[in-house]
Image (tube, rainbow, N blue to C red; front, side):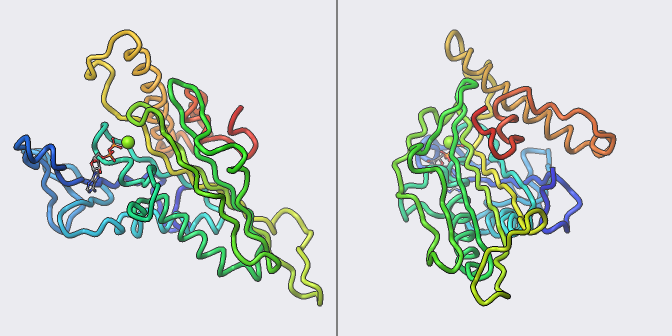
Length: 295
Ligand code: ADP
Ligand code: MG
């Protein structure tokens, strides 16, 4: 709920549109772009309708990294100031969610997505802070498919990535493991970064970790989510098993929509109104406090 860039922004929820170019198979089928971007405006036109967002990307010439710089880098900075945030990639299957998030990051060739860029930024920052701050960095990568939760990282490897104070030179990075997302179209993939910082007391001759707890520790969490395809169950011609999957996935997306509406409802928030986090695994996971990722 405190999604903000260093407390500067009033809006809790911001929406950016990333329009992907037509892919080869679409060009071969003779498809043409149906979306135009209004130059200089965060606005798109489809036929006679126009829609305005906080940001629009994807008109030819905008670099892929701009979406990271403008939308996600401020949240990465805010993470270090103790702000929680969530980035959600929403759209129908094939619209470019995985590409944009970098969820299938497997080689240097496709490191332009949001997740690798966030991690690179975090490692740079922690490296620069390591003499003054003890940093505990943990990541998890979880898939929700049919309301079941799967750990996409080898449980033996993912436990903690720890950047020590002066003693440890570099943040320890878990070996890269081949990640199999089993049902990319119909599952939610949630990459979560938990960052805890503690100032090192450098006054004493021997460098010691300050043992005053409480205000000395800053901890926050950034969720980067590649959501399941937003196409509706009935549109996929689904029946039987497929339909059941569709219903489950809709539960996550539906609950997410309801949570976002409730959070965006200022009146409701001020009155401490009910936020329906518990309606799906996805929303429970995004709400979860430290220890409860698998509860
Ligand atoms: P989704 O995850 O929403 O189902 P993908 O990320 O898999 O969609 O993208 C579908 C196809 O479009 C992939 O072949 C991907 O490489 C391509 N694609 C997506 N976004 C872009 C982009 N911004 N530029 C070029 N190709 C893209
Ligand atoms: Mg995908």
